[in-house]
Length: 168
Image: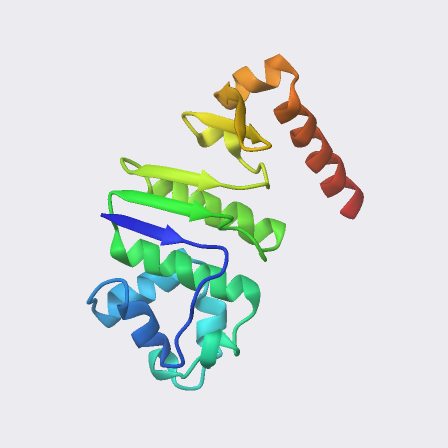
């Protein structure tokens, strides 16, 4: 019923195929489609054994972003009605992050998606945003409502936008 993408995805010392099949018994075509949705085809194309490639203990042959996208591919395969994403775009560059969020938005249509993050990217997608500070909900609403309140949420959005602008 629930797919979870944790910020510390566990990868088994096994093949790419078997790490994906943890989510759901699937055809090779389904596995490749999940890799495509998770923006992993460029990485996959460089693997010598394709789906049969060993990816190492804890995914040692993968970058942090590749591990995160592998977890997203698992969630896509499982296709549960409830998705929980805990910092799903951690370790991703800005362009890949935007693409992954777009993919999740499309694939998550009609699902309950719980998105736990410090990176406030594309927040206008979400029906309800709960802002927490010191373990308490301090603001709630949709993106445009929270922006009008000019509270902590607005401050963080602006801070992150400035940091992004400075890094370009």
